[in-house]
Length: 306
Image (cartoon, rainbow, N blue to C red; front, side, top):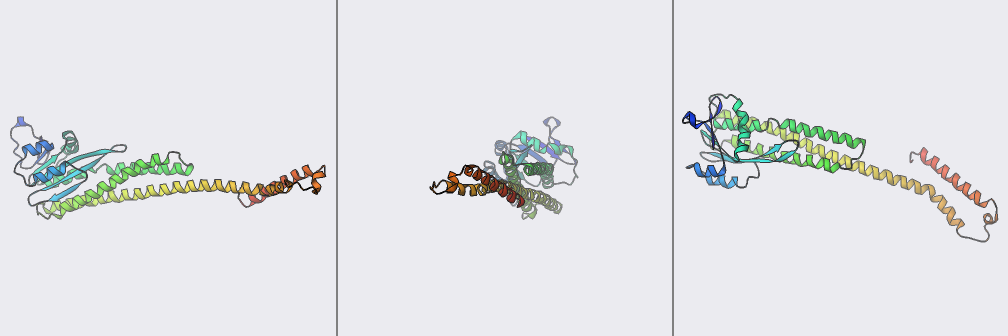
């Protein structure tokens, strides 16, 4: 268990410095520590049950506490899993429940900040949520740049591994789309303030956070539509390529169709065919076939069929 005091600064409490006298505290602990050391808090069992099966972000408001779960995608080059934690807020206590290493990473940046003295734990939690989406625009912009490069490659030639390149971005955008939608619902639930625990300033902070996440959600929604347009462009390129091949085969068939007719005639072997006995019959038919092919090629070329 790690305890931080929340005043104008966010400081880690050390047992050697004596008791933590700061009224507002942020406490990081594992689910086992929360169950064993935190007593006499309402709805503790409900939170422990939720923590065992964290799948999405949500918040629940009760008479004297706010609790919920968070599933935060890990954004590197691609989305690589998720960090899952639970939270429990009372008037002067914020419990973050999960793996210690992940929790320290999630709150680490806040130690560099300075806060107004009147900041509540609810306002601090909103600051945490904002810090967790600070770099998301850069990640989304990176996805957009890669999709643009894929589109340019598609215009030059049809990639052999098109779906191998596109599908990871579709999965990442789908994950972010769901994540931001859940965050919007979480922020809206908290700022509804049905249990009257939040000061007006904190309600406004959560409204601003919801608006910020909505802009991210809209950007991801636009990129999801962009991936569909790229996919449709790929299918159109495939159809065009196949159509072009079929057109070429049709033209070649049309060119040699008259020759097939000649072969049919002279394959009948009637006894009264004058060309059969003429010494110039065979060369004449060859010359006629060549002339027919040349004339047809000229006609098809003028009509842009070749």
